[in-house]
Amino acid sequence: MSKNRARDRAARAHMNASGSFRARAARTVDTTGPDPTPGTVAFLLSAAIPAEPSPGLQPDATMESLFGALVARSAHDVRRDGVRYPAFFEVYVVPPPAHKPGEVPEGWRLLDAFILVSARRPWHLDDEDERVVTDAFRAARTALNDYWPGLPDWSGHAALPLWVLAGLRGMTTEEQARGLILDMQQAALEHTWTIGADSDVDPRM
Image (cartoon, rainbow, N blue to C red; front, side, top):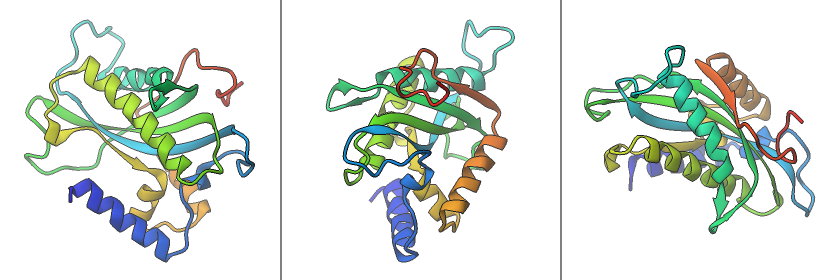
């Protein structure tokens, strides 16, 4: 079992034992009806980017801002079974946790992004929260790998849904989850969002 999968199972067990929420605790609207409705879920994207600035980077830009822009733009390519559906990402680039020597490939460095994903989906279906997170992660991972190829497979990008992230921090209530979202937003090095998203899924509209 991979390290990420073992961590995910441990978090699931903790959250199930405490009778706690899942990602739907982060939803900003009521999504309990049978029809597709706008809703928002969240996850932490753990990624690796080149240690050196990319060629052509604008003088006033940073690798953090470029990373955030690539992730935000990838919302235009969120798909399920090969079919694209409209999505909007609000991206908070945050410092990664400390790591041990050898955990990051030479020439790369870690960077995280806390992402709020908005979409019109049938949220009443089992595991739709997790499936949307998976769809969003795949779009972001593809965008990053296309722009910065060469990341070794053993150090690939990873996603941690909000409910798993909260469980690993011992949080068991919706209020604590919302506090975690606020903490991520306040810790952001960069904040950006999807430009040109469908107004139907852009919560700012």
